[in-house]
Length: 97
Ligand SMILES: [Zn+2]
Image (cartoon, rainbow, N blue to C red):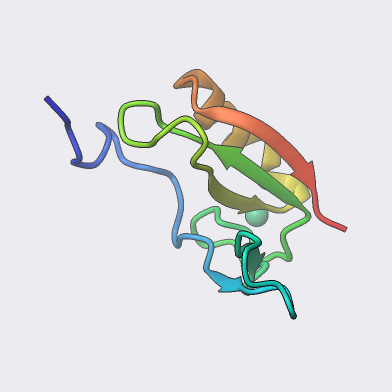
């Protein structure tokens, strides 16, 4: 049985990170590259530039190699990553350059 409904309590974000898929020029067989097009913190109500990417995966919903991405500013990195970590979802925290 697969539960695809929202998690109890919901997620503490105002908006998902938006992404586009871009094909590397001249490459037909390479995987599309994930590009974040709106690098704003995912925390609800925050409009700071995101300086961190939180890569996470919900094993109940996603295949193991799938990554969802939340963006976070310095101020909200700790609270957003703690939320994911408490549920065992957090995979990597990556500094945006
Ligand atoms: Zn923020």
